[in-house]
Image 1 (spheres, rainbow, N blue to C red):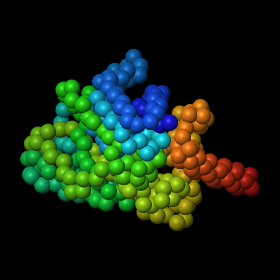
Image 2 (image 1 turned 180 degrees about the horizontal axis):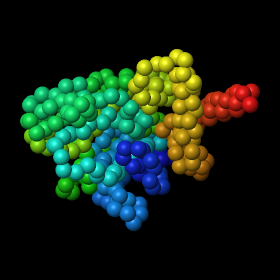
Image 3 (image 1 turned 135 degrees about the vertical axis):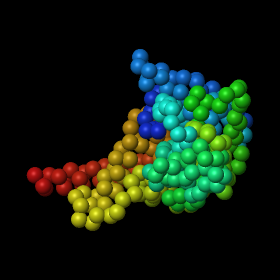
Image 4 (image 1 turned 90 degrees about the horizontal axis):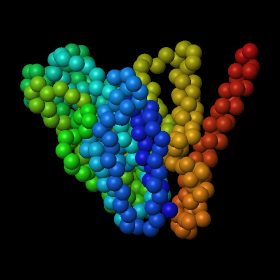
Length: 324
């Protein structure tokens, strides 16, 4: 049994704005198609009308609304894909390209200074004191990315177009060469496709948004180490360390780790790219011996993370009780 999940998130906060849609597949080969609606209305206000921006297919990002997944290897048990929607902001002003770094592993914007390492072609960078902005009034831009960034490698650039890329093209994703149990998981098992030294091009007077997508091969080991690496390098803002502050930097890391563990175990969310336990229970009778082994290993990892979260919460409760 192979579980394919599609989530809908809001850019750039990552807030889940629609229920997860799950499809199950039997033995290979299998195919799946999804067309993201161009618009998504969350309410009656103008700012509630979101527009499609990009897919995180599980391996790559694309601003094409229609994606076809071609599954032939199917070594995986769980595959996550996400369609991202946002509200176009800004307005008339100096033409510029705004760039953000995006982690394919945590499926979120990275809290780093900038993904831009340099710009050629006559454009202005930094633009108006912002390292994430490239001014294009003075000329075209060829933008290079920082690599590695927070220990992750560049997978490529993607321009964000509100409403998606024009036309009716199809983006094809495959599981060729993927040996991972979960996708994207921690990146191990040949999940990501790397394009080192890829550059983003922009014409003179062009305005828009872009993201630099980053991933890893999962060599850091995943699990708690992977979460800590994600939190320390991506989610904790860059700042001078104040060793006499309360809470201390280590306490902040512990707090963020517990919060992240809780977030990843909320209903409708997956733990470490992982598991909807109700669906796993329902699927067990139809799993092969190999699928059962892989799923057991994944669930054991999730349970271990939950036990760590419980221990951390209990320790904090005791600590707070002593201070009363």
